[in-house]
Image 1 (cartoon, rainbow, N blue to C red):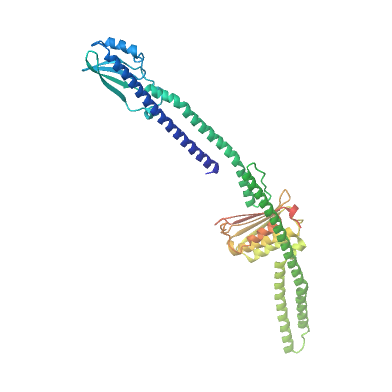
Image 2 (cartoon, rainbow, N blue to C red; image 1 turned 180 degrees about the horizontal axis):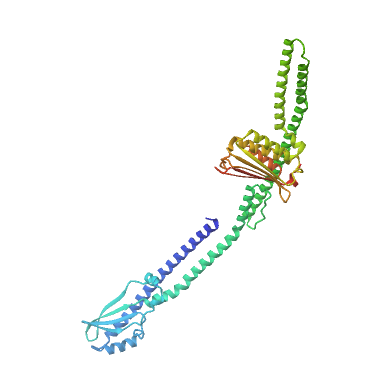
Length: 447
């Protein structure tokens, strides 16, 4: 649940509480007013009726009515009173209330406000000594209707203010919290490696401070990444330069020395023409020297190939990759690697060439050790915008992206790509093989 919704729910609860409390207060006051008004009117009418009856002649109901009209003109038209005279077994109505306006108020309000039934009785004696009882019954319907007329505007006002304030708060909070979405988007960009993301200045001081701190953090991260990228690129360049120098040294010095030993051994073998026994020993020794020299030469060539592929310097990336893939296919008959190249790949620069070669070499090594695949595909091409795209995929067992096995060299590949300001993408899963997609901007990555 978002912060905006939570704040609005809290404010809604507060306004509902205020509305309920206000309604209870209005109902309490209305209930008291209705009860007091009803009882006071009934008591006043009863007192007037006592006086009127006491002065009336026996049997003179018309005289009583006439006297009531004189002393209490409103009795006949009383809105919520019913007056009756009980003499013996007879109950004679003296005043009948008009129908109350109870229906004007909603039932729930009427049930909450309506007081207990009001009925006042008073025994009286006329001038002739007749005993009787005056009964006054009060109907609070009109008072309830009047209370509803008074309470309705207040309740509607509270309800309207609650709805208006809640809507206004919802809109205002949404506007105030809108920068949070930009902050989250910028943080997502940082997570994806886009350290150039920046936030504008916000009106709210709190969010403004957050934006200022975020921008400073992004600047520091971007500067650190540029430094790390430069250092990684320089480290790789120094490493490759050392490998190249070592490979040349092995080729020029040790290779030539081994070739000289082989020549001397061949010369000894040719010149060993003397006694049969001596010549046999010399020939055997010469053959042994030749075998050892051949073995050393093979070892040196392997070391030179691992240190620095000679074909990469002499014939370019495509020829070096072909020689790498062909040699790998010869050594691994159960797995086939298919290499495809597209467009021009001879002007990438030494840094890009050696990085692509090392990445392909590392991927093939990983496939041999971990993938248990039957086929590997390597695709190298130039895109329409001039960037280099390298795609490597196998049909092996794969692995969980969050738990890459140690020793796969993924970190080293990623560092090589990032040192060239490229993009490194890895897609894998249990039983789905490994799919590697690398994009290197040649315009900025050549060197």
